[in-house]
Image 1 (cartoon, rainbow, N blue to C red):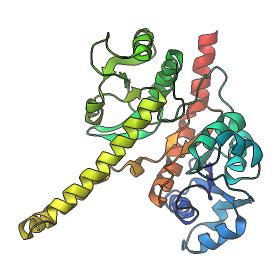
Image 2 (image 1 turned 180 degrees about the vertical axis):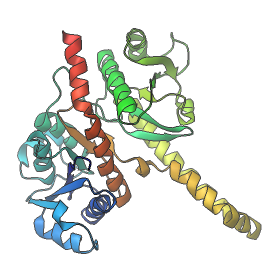
Image 3 (image 1 turned 30 degrees about the vertical axis):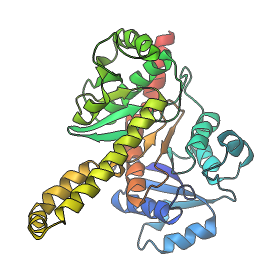
Length: 338
């Protein structure tokens, strides 16, 4: 029997909390016998929502009662410092205390970033902790980092992102010798802004990653590279455009297929294959974005996450724990310092 992974879930964070969050946690429990869930939030509310979820292994669920919630619009630093009994801060403490292996939240992104670093803490030697979501591509998935945590990052930050991302893709996702590229406006080495020009030779000199050069945004969906490195402003724009375009294309395709009687007949014949194809480009299939470089696993899901994304994010934590990525990153940095 595999070792149990204990995941703490912020039941009160997100647009569709608490029901969708709690349903996702229950779905993960029902799919995987080696997961235990700790839900942080208002106990009475959580119990009411659990009753709506049908049958689940109650012995693998624990509730930690909290009295505060960090709202989306709150200032991140002030919220983390003032709301010590919030579902987010209490959840992060479970990771710090090692009573849980991971923490998953759909709440305030800025607060989760601040809380992750102040409460859970960064691994010694890590300068910045990036958000690192998996994105669907023609060939599977790629990891893009940073996607929102560190706007105006420095070149040495991006080098660390590349190394952590390479470890994630190899050891958690099973990609042998993952290809690493930096986002640029052209393939030539001399192109790019000041940050890209400064970072490129540093990545080229790294002998512990498979750096293949630049990747243009239009080539990302092809899946020719496994780890995509950029600072948070660029990464967030790419991610949001990626998600928005995917949603729009799906809507336009469905609309076109329903436009005439003939197209409806064709749609009925093509529906099974179409559903399978479109499913691969659904970002919620791949869970959340881990905040890499912390002393423990903290995962951010979309604010609009539904139960499917929450369940997948929870199961994502199992692979992370099994590979002990945080310790691997820490050991790699200590080797550098030696």
